Length: 471
Image 1 (cartoon, rainbow, N blue to C red):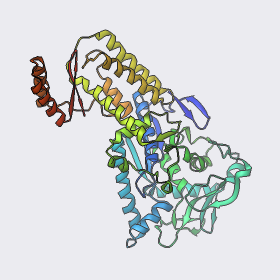
Image 2 (cartoon, helix red, strand yellow; image 1 turned 90 degrees about the vertical axis):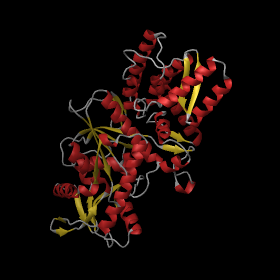
Image 3 (cartoon, rainbow, N blue to C red; image 1 turned 45 degrees about the vertical axis):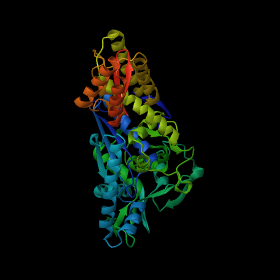
Image 4 (spheres, rainbow, N blue to C red; image 1 turned 60 degrees about the vertical axis):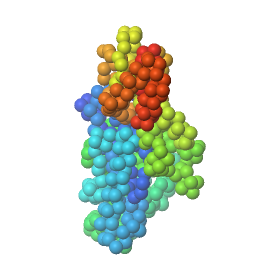
């Protein structure tokens, strides 16, 4: 498989470090509010990557974190539950939004059962242990408000700060970042641990004889969680391009400072931004959407998934309601094609069609293994669908048709092989309608057509018999 590696700035051949298991870590949500669709697009990419790796025959261990302690979660939990102890308030808020996140993940077709989730608050001891080691190694220092990572000491040890992007001396400052927000203009020493403030949750911590009760900084969380479940180095680290700096760059620094191997992960794979009407999402621009906003307008969440898959993960995707309409129409066509397997089987060019199924599946896998080229893969599927539609072929049986829908479902995350058949009563209505047409009883035919439409079914008459589809 080939993937674009942000470390090398090019598309490289990917080979797992362990022949038996491919290890993947994805930066997950900060669980203080509903996740917006830009975040969800990143998680669709990560889910698709895991699906394709699995379809290539690899056993994948995929880990995603919940950031359940940081500035945002603490602030929101204090606002929402001022009457509770700070730790209790934090736990209650983040559990609520973690559950909502998992529900959104399921609705967009992400297989959460194939992933391992880990909370930052369950890994505090590991964070304290790493911070203590960094301090003992000279890479961390104690300040009046916490413990900071020293970029200067990291560089002095012969390490490279700027593996993912070029960071010059001009944009490196001796200042410190005290909050968990991004600062993309320059590189600063960043907080590994923050001393306790009134009203904030706190964990005990002693370092170099000093009492530093408080809580971890943002970057240290992912370093510890990824290593605890995947080891170091692991194979692939995913995330949106907005995480390249400073988050992923800082992860690499604190993860490799004490190691002779400068590699945290062999591949860093980043997806591009999701734009809304050509602009970055912003509440001030009134173009900030969650999945529920889409559902409330009557869209299937899987139409959003398909819209994301129609663009390459390294190109910006433009969310518009028109684009979502187009994706919804395409999804309807795919479902109708998948439902053909329940309909009358014919022996029309079986060898040619069977071979087309085979080459389509091969072309799709080839496209997906070429840096996750989902647009090309969907184009190959459309060619097969168009061929069958143009000659009005209902269900077919053959060596290569068997298992194709299950394969497509496994890589695209769309329910194709698992969609149920229509009822026996509905099949009887379709048969009776055809009998009425054969008898030229058009009134009866129209009556049965209307009854089927009321039950959510449309019927198309073809030379090979009636073909139904769901409305």
